[in-house]
Amino acid sequence: MAEVEAIKDLDKVRLISHLLEIRCSKQMADIWNIGLNLALRISDLLSIKFTDIRDGRLIIFEGKTGKRAEIKLNDKAQLLINNIQLKHRNHIYLFQSYRNRQSINRKPKPLNRRSVTKAFMLVGEELGIRLGTHSMRKSRGFHLYKKTNDIARVMKMLRHSSEGVTLRYIGIDQEVIDTDFVELEI
Image (cartoon, rainbow, N blue to C red):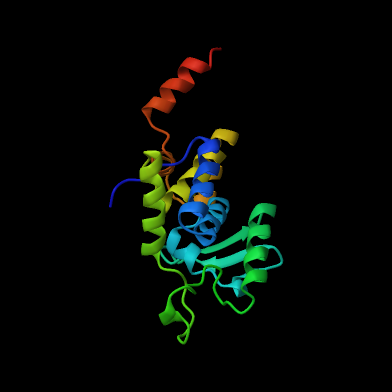
């Protein structure tokens, strides 16, 4: 699997949302926007059930690590989730598969990772960037780091155990470090 990148330009973050909605679907744009605000792995994001959300909090156990994640929903995430729930009152999953004819008379399932990956790659190709399902998580981590300069805080949010892993993950590479040295004169 090709390495994907954090989206470091906030205008590009918004453009990706717009392109996902017009090129793919509102559901793909919702995945992007909610994914940016929750910083979950795509498998955990797609597995969210409405019952996992209580009192403005999402509580899940991460599939990869088994760790409990309790995330306070910000206003944007809460609004998007409420809109999805109003539109699809009888859905079990936040991102439920519902367009496929085969899904009509079957047990509800979440949207699959493959379709999200395909939509993200399509928009990424159009913009000339390596966009993938991890881009949401990486972008959230990058922007929190740029806002706070607190790598421990980013590590905690992403539930990583190493600063080095977190820095690499969010795309803080030598070029960024060089820029920081040049721009900060004491």
